[in-house]
Length: 202
Image (cartoon, rainbow, N blue to C red; front, side):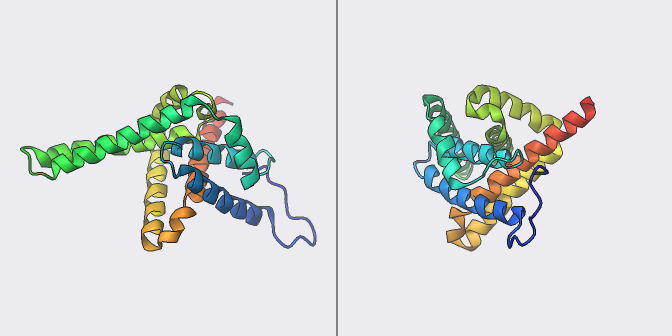
């Protein structure tokens, strides 16, 4: 977010404080839009796009969030949500089968957990990519490449998810705020990778 302006003389709150407040309001908006579940990918993708725009001088307010969300209303977003929901249900079913004491269950549980973790990282990184606004398959393909060539960034994504889950577990009302910090973390990981790629290219 290096493009943010400096605090003006006499200004009480600096731009970083404003961004923090906007991030929390975007988090509340994202949590509300995620309630139907199948809208979760579009909601998180929109939050990432709004926060990414803050580094380019555009406002990151909840009002802009809903404007961007209305612009992207399309069947592809619901399809992405349905695929994500089906994947999550399949993962839970696999873990339930592993816990039922079937032969080879421990190994199966480890493999399922590994696949589920990889899918989670790729899905979240896809939400942070600009392609997710118009083309989910392209976003997922690029996110899979990002996950492989930027292992450190993928670890940061998992750390952000773990932190969000821990905050929500410790204090349930925080669950309505954590989408904002999570979206900011995903956006920061994407911007970090894009910056490093631009540096190598130059």
